[in-house]
Image (tube, rainbow, N blue to C red; front, side):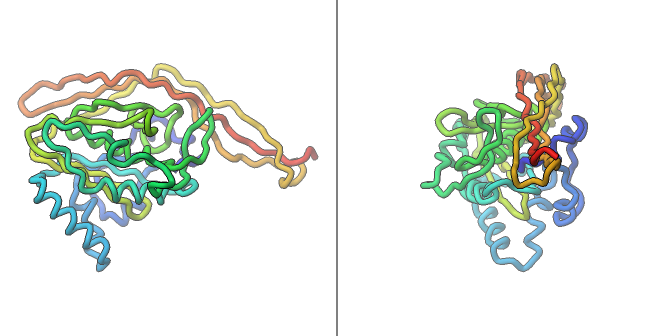
Length: 301
């Protein structure tokens, strides 16, 4: 979720990635407030199945059935995003979107579109108000929060070696991945799309459990080794917007949101396939506007 504490993360913390090694329950306690690459799928998606919860067992059975049907037995890549302090009703949106996405098969040569698979993000489709950026502010909108699904898919597709056809950055920085690694969607305007350029089907699996979104890709090809690189070209500190709150005591102030700095970043990948030299792949330059620091004050003391 979008939370003031995220604004205080240093750039090196924002870029942190940690492999999965400890049991999932402990990982959920220790996660940074950034997205993390998943390297060990069994411990990620199946650890909870050791508990006697029928719903988890059903998900494992569904996943195994889909993998067999799609002939997509090999783990390609995965990504997780933890929502520690959700805003509005974004957890409902993430649970709904993850449930609809799970089991999607992308045939060889086909292009996956998140908007086609999950949109439109409307009340009629079951989506609820969640956090979105509009007009330089953080506001509730139907389907808000589903950009986390797009972001997880984007990172998973990159690590699976699948070409990205369409991706858009947010207008302002998000706290769950470093600048340059997010993906925004808005039905009819912004989509996230990737192509399955392999000769085998690719299976998308997703789940939302214990405040964490998981996205995994399965297939039959050997994914490359991918490392991300970013260069900060410019940084702009947020300004402060003050507003009156008559419910506060005289002379008191309350920080509603710490705000986020603005960034311009260049992002590129180093992609290494077996027996080949690393290949540099430029992803372009993204510019994020600052999100103002919001402060309320009571009557003058």
